[in-house]
Amino acid sequence: MRKLIPVLILGAFALVIAHQEIPAFADWWESALFPEAWQVKNTCQQAAIKQSDNPDYARILKSGKVHNTEKGTYIDRLVLGEMDKGGVEQKIEYTCYLDSAGVLVKLNRLGNKRPVTSESDIELSPAP
Image (cartoon, rainbow, N blue to C red; front, side, top):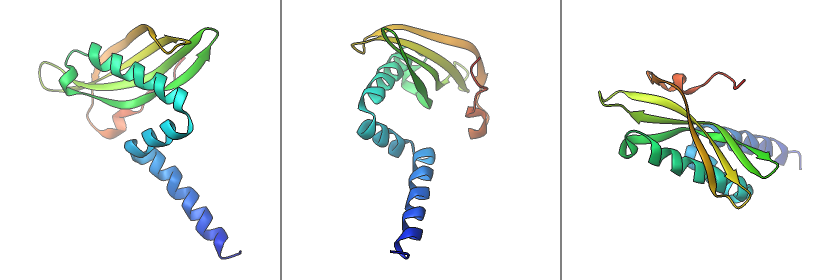
């Protein structure tokens, strides 16, 4: 039993790192363990990509944070990277409201465009 404890601890650290560093793993994890939250995030992400200036060259940088409201769901901190007319990737933050059935009610495009110069630029300041 004592030999198993370090393996379990190592496995737990590996899961945490994989969740943070591998978007496909994080997506799978959320869809398996939190399917309702994953579905509303996915709805919001697809709507944001469709609304972007250049949907063919848009990608999700931050998947967003889900908050329950009285009659639905609110998602903030969804960040897309999208290519502008000059070929430079800009990061754009979005928020979404969905009703209790998961239907998009409102999609908001926030803030000014800022160029993404490195992966460390993906971090945003905390929401007010």
